[in-house]
Image (tube, rainbow, N blue to C red; front, side, top):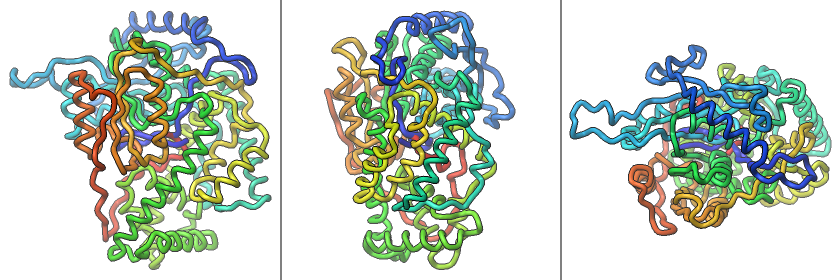
Amino acid sequence: MRAAALYTAAGSLLLTGLAATPAGGAPAAPGGLELRGTAVAAQRAAAAGIRFGSCPEEEALPSSLQCGTVTVPLDYAHPGGKQIKLTVSRIRATGQDARNAKHKVPRQGALVHNPGGPGASGMYFPLAGRLPEWQRLAAAYDLVGYAPRGVDPSAPLSCEDPERLLKGPTQSPTYPSASYKKERIARAQAYARGCARRAGSALRHYTSLNNARDLDVLRAALGERKLTFLGSSYGTYFGAVYATLFPSHVRRMVFDAAVNPAPGQIWYQNNLDQSAAFEDRWADFRAWIARHDRTYGLGDTGDEVRRGYEKARARLAAEPAGGKVGPAQLQAAFLQAGYYDDRWPQRALALSAYLKGDPKPLIEQAGPDPETAAEEENGKAVYTAVECNDAPWPTDWSVWDRDNTALARVAPFETWDNVWTNLPCAYWPAPRQQPLDVRTRPGALPPTLILAAERDAATPYEGALELHRRLSDSVLVTERDAGSHGIAGGPNTCVNAYLDAYLLEGRLPVRRASCAPHPQPKPKPKPTTPDDRSPSGKAARHTS
């Protein structure tokens, strides 16, 4: 699936944590060598701590952030073997620095965040404390972000030359021909080979299960006896794996935009469900544009807007905008509108301007960016490695072709692009694992909070319901009739009140609660500088 995030941060599709077993074998019980290896690594990390100081200059992070590293084993079955370093960022709790004593807030420890992916970095997360919605939490908690294993600068993984991402424009047929499918199969096979060639024997160790183990080592290195964690999108999946493996190490956990953790969903079925859900979200976006026809002039019905979009696709296929933007780039940009409705005004404006003869807004929003190519390639590599390693995938192309041809008849917007993103998993050279059965018994885990938007396409709502069923004593808060991917700390004050009450006071509703949707965005009649180039808002591909 795709990238997800905290309200302003992008992530990716979510993956399942698995037991260390080759495809076809019985899943290993969560324990044994890896569990002992995690305890050894955590003990070492607790003794060493984290030496926070200035962040690496090449990371271009603000001076207000402190950075350090945590050492973890590449292979937890051999904790004395090869080690890798995870880079961590932090801003200390601001409540300790208040000049007026009566405004001081007791520090509650570290709040660790993962924004999703797999392949997304949380290094910028501590800066959320500057936003009004996060200031109460920033007063009580050290805000901690990190780059998971494989994500630059934490032992970065690469599968191809980043320059390939700048080669465009590219096609993206809604109903691909047999010859186009054959071409994409060859590209998927070559990509899988590139991952194996560049990563070598380390490739198999990029998994959700290892991400959960790394999280426990990070907890220990921070000096926290128990973990307080906010996971968004994919972060909810390996957060749930963590809760299953280390329930006694949990203090409080928030699962924002939950991935469906059922073993049979990981990851092939989750991607099919995601493609179906994006069709509904695409309809939501078109309906919004139609309601603002006086601003955009794209038609006063969703069908008229769709015809305008298809007209743009056809025109870009014949003559790419600025020599940079073809149908694939258009689709990638409009997919972001399916993730976040705050993108709607910009995308609608770009489409309107393009059809009226001005391609500049579309080129600005959808064109390739050399400055982010290396970051995007790294994120794609980690996404692919984790998803492919995590679970069995169909290895027969006819299965993919059958399932997605049928789905594309009713959900054409995203189906085939989702296939091309994940198809390397059909030809993956590393051993596959079996997904962990995420589940906790009553009383084993402290109460946890699940947040979900009812019309989220990247992580469909059924995933939140399934996670709620599997985590005993969890509470689900739903934003009704809304579809932004990741709602913690966003524009919904009702959602944020539940978030603050839980993280600051440990208070939760009984079992479920709901909030009215946040207001839809207002149309923008004039071009604005696109905000999609920031590390937290780029048009990332297929992540949760």
